[in-house]
Length: 227
Image (tube, rainbow, N blue to C red):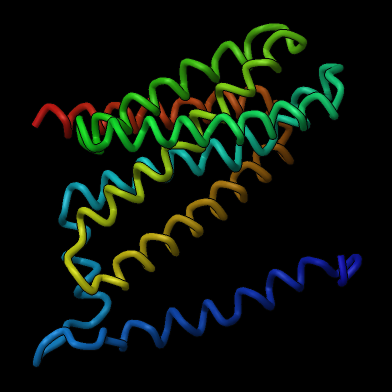
């Protein structure tokens, strides 16, 4: 908004501190970690060996992919098929409101059945709700935005709980690295989407393909729950 035609340089400038942090932050150690605190990279290797930590990453990426692909492009998708953009906005907002009780139910299921079981159910539900939303005539499928958004965005609190459960006390690096990796994966996903769209790949095909991600996450959660 402030840079006009040179808006891309704003993003480049914001990336510089992150690049500097990549070079310097691995030298840091957390306070009160004992007489021989482990560096950041060594802690990250330990965390990555934990199944729950990895599963939290899978679930978060499944939710983020819905944010940046299906939900993010839904206004363009439905408007191109003749749906009033104002209706799309209202339904997206309604889905956000619906996510509040869905998150409460998800938390209760997490307490009763565990993180992998709950994330699997939510990812399967997301894929099942997304298919008719995209495949039905747009004037009908657009109404599926409400339950789809309500379910898709609600898996993130479950993955957050899985993350915290996987880490020991004073694990700020583990949480910070997790979040940074999630943002990086979202940026990469957005770049891939932009590249494919510029090559002429239909948006509907990309959105349908993205629904395969929560299905893959559900498979990973099923295997973990079966162990």
